[in-house]
Amino acid sequence: MPGDKYEMYGKPKPPTDPNAEYMTLQETAYVLKCSPKTITRLLDELDLKSKPGRGIVTDSATRRALYEHRIQGPKRIRRPARRARRTIAPAPVKSAA
View 1: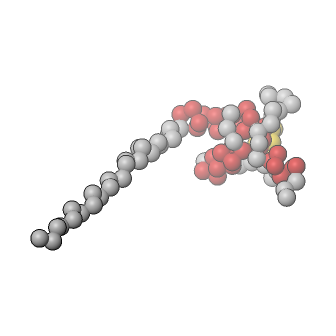
View 2: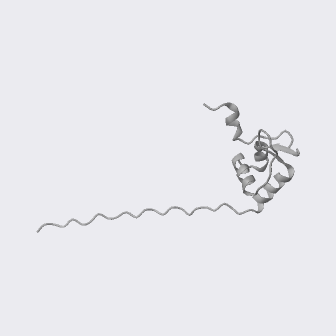
View 3: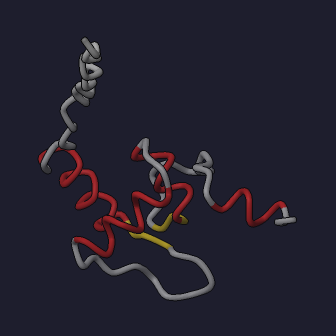
């Protein structure tokens, strides 16, 4: 059974100061209105650096770059709706005459 800290790691939480120089991953996710997993994916995708330590900490320049990418970046590609499967009509039964 996972502990409380493990379960809270994947949830955004409001920062104590929204204009702080450094924020944790969860606080950054809250400010940018996305999930912490999205933040880590974008950090890797854009080759942005975060402060080393126990957790991921972003500075204001990194947050600004993430924000600009989310505003101007490519939109999510939506898959077209699945077409209904064609059913094969049963073969006609030949009468033995």
